[in-house]
Amino acid sequence: MPVPLVHVLVLGGTTEARRLAENLAAPAPGFPLRFRVTTSLAGRVAAPRLPPGEVRVGGFGGPEGLAAWMREHGVDVLVDATHPFAATMSRNAAEAAALAHVPLLALRRPGWVAQDGDRWHSAGSLEEAAGLLPALGERVFLTTGRMGLAAFAGAGTDALWFLVRSVDAPEPPCPARMEVLLDRGPFDLDGERELLRRHRIDVLVTKDSGGDATAPKLTAAREAGIPVVVVRRPPVPQGVPVARTPDEAARRVRRLYASG
Ligand SMILES: NC(=O)c1ccc[n+]([C@@H]2O[C@H](COP(=O)([O-])OP(=O)(O)OC[C@H]3O[C@@H](n4cnc5c(N)ncnc54)[C@H](OP(=O)(O)O)[C@@H]3O)[C@@H](O)[C@H]2O)c1
Image (cartoon, rainbow, N blue to C red; front, side, top):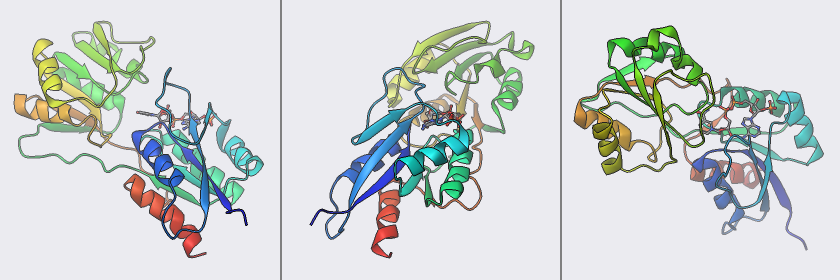
């Protein structure tokens, strides 16, 4: 008898989404079903790292489009494993899951926690982060990604110099005085120390992305006594259950079927 297939749509673009796809693709001892995993990518990165299973690329056209796609492709479970700052997609996922009557789980790595010696300044948005900078330093290491650089291009930041690190090249509007460093994590501590030193960085800006891959910059900043502006995360949409790790998410997805 053929083994029943459960179709899981993973909204991806993160390491955790890839790990979840790997986990679900592997057979689990004692679990009677198999998963067909489709990962959806927004298409922002020119050469993304691909997960196992099927991959589709590009927007769905809002929550209605996502709901229609799920109906058309027989999706049984939706996992929002997007980056903690992909707030629009997370909202769309919550709406679409309700429209299509598909169970939804969010996969969110925990945020970072300040340690002794950290000089963190919390900001509610990129604009607020930009507003804090002139009082904190002049040579900024900006690691918030290539989208949203406009927030740092305003008049209040004219006197600042930026080292902008991103996976793909940013597009205007950008800060007037900047150097772009194209790179993709994981980053190691020695490399981050060297970057801060070589570019004489005196303030760092980061989103509270969490995870190990990009955390060494925080250690390097702590060691160097450099202030860090940390942009707070948007909340997960109300009522959406959250798993903190890919393994936990996979267990919760399997549990939907084990108990049902
Ligand atoms: N924001 C970050 O800092 C960040 C960092 C690293 C990686 N990422 C990844 O980059 C992607 C885009 O992030 P964002 O912050 O630009 O998103 P966003 O602002 O929340 O979403 C904007 C639109 O992009 C489309 N979209 C986003 N994620 C998608 C996905 N996984 N599959 C298909 N369409 C998607 C949707 O278009 P439609 O409405 O047309 O469906 C969505 O309405 C996400 O996959 C995210 O995981 C984001």
